[in-house]
Image (cartoon, rainbow, N blue to C red):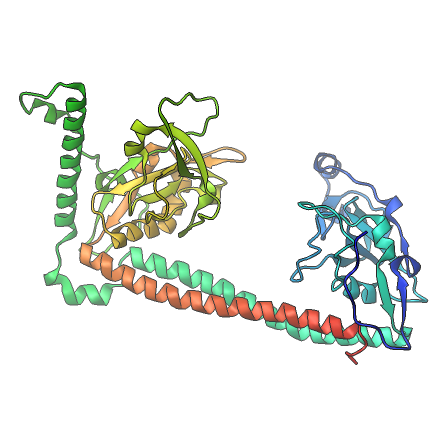
Length: 474
């Protein structure tokens, strides 16, 4: 065991003993059961017939019997957050319950100390040198027994516990209020985005600028012209690559006009706005599957986006992976600035989740589980508008139209191509994003302040515990 970090010396009338001297360790009575065993045992039984089943950090389910009764102190053996001071590693279990092998089960020797005194001490103890492992930390019973415990006289211990709980109750009330504020800010963020993509946010601005704006219908006509021109340019490139340049324009008749948008179940839009399918206003593309067995001729190694990289309203790019692709395919697959990203799925909350691409990494492509929509109008605020729509009302559309199995949900290119999308006058879209970004900046500032206060509250708890077990709290 490595050297233990220095601690404050306890007062003269306190003693320091190893944990093994002040508790009974009941680990030998634990009985681990896997999830299937528990499920089989509780099937068809009433909740009143079941008992809590405890693990490293708390209850992890129920079981139809109990092996412990009364108040006991549980301390994580493995997979507990030993070095995260915002979380607890010890907790009290009371009544009738079952414990698996991921938590030590202790019972304080009442003539020496109490479960609650040890609870608070073990939740502030520095486990450096006492736990082993890297990805999965473990506190074995040998090290558990040697944990040094500063013991005040028994009556003083009771007063210390009472004072801790009194001070914690005030802090916990503040934490609860902060967490409620955090949830309200999250709800307000969503309401701002929904108001933005349905025109409520710019109603007053729109009324004062009606005569100055290109209509949404004119905008769509302009986009469709750009759509057709891009298709024709791509066709000509393909003809040239094959050495077969057409002598007339008959090939242009193969162009497929976008289908009509299906409007069922959509929110009401301002009269000045219109609906359009996503594939009317953007090219919808897929990515490249990751395959170690694929043979690549003339390869180039490129970064790619996975589902984990594409979150709802932001991207996480600190852990990027690469894959080899053929150089000749890079032009078709490479992400372009202001592309809008949509996740294929996985868990249901990931359906259609996405954000915009701002050329943070070049070159970069997407894995086949991340779709990209390349708008025919290349403007940052236009792409943000489309992404905000997908991240709000789009969630309902993707859930309704996606394919769902027991554990997975997914959308395909056809579902995404048919995604009904509101189209506002381009200047109004710009105004919308200006207002949204101003409001979201204020929300983010408030969220930061709330998070700072939550961190301070946890630090206050640790400070209280440090004072308590160095004899300075009373």
